[in-house]
Length: 104
Image 1 (cartoon, rainbow, N blue to C red):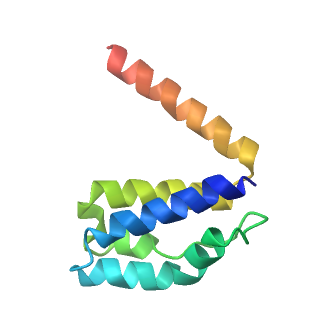
Image 2 (image 1 turned 45 degrees about the vertical axis):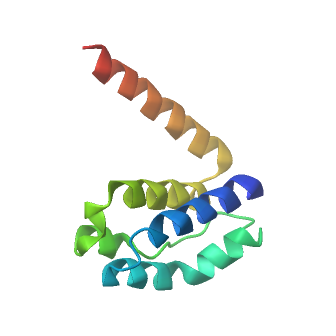
Image 3 (image 1 turned 90 degrees about the horizontal axis):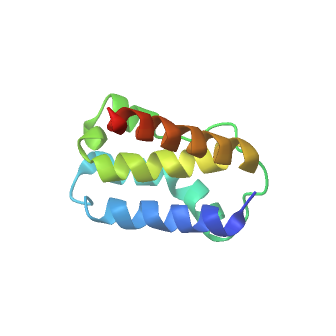
């Protein structure tokens, strides 16, 4: 797993969340992610994790109103739950789909 990429995504997620720290749901999300983000920033995630808390805050709470936060969370979650090659394949596929959609 790419430790530097994981660390960068964790920091990016934290920075994004700080913009919305007045929102109680965002604070709760970050509290739920605290251990994983700490491990990521200390480069201690060496294999894919089985569970990343936080989906609830986007599906049932207010966090989905912050698209940049949702994007940062999704990128972080994908990176730490997938093998590097799976992640890269998924990103390539998504970029190809995006190109196809916007061509039309």
